[in-house]
Length: 100
Image (cartoon, rainbow, N blue to C red; front, side, top):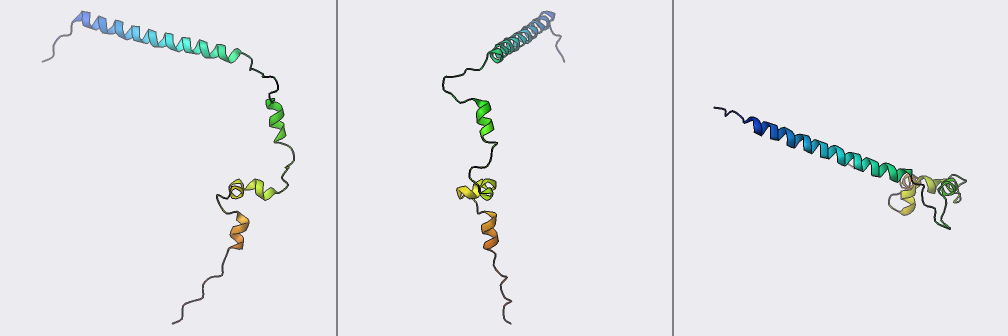
């Protein structure tokens, strides 16, 4: 059989739940305030540091290397994988049929 729940126990559970919910909402509001104030600050510019807009434009210019194949295959340049040009050179003729 079910026992009848005490009304004071139900009220206490509601109070604890509401207090926990209020605490979580307060914590989220505090974190939001801290992060929004950090976003409003201007970025720090060190003396003699590179400027991001200049560095970004440097990579968009002409290719200083001059060889497009190396730029397109960085893993082949590092020696991790063979390049496509090497794979076409390494093709072999099919084996002749076995004699009967």
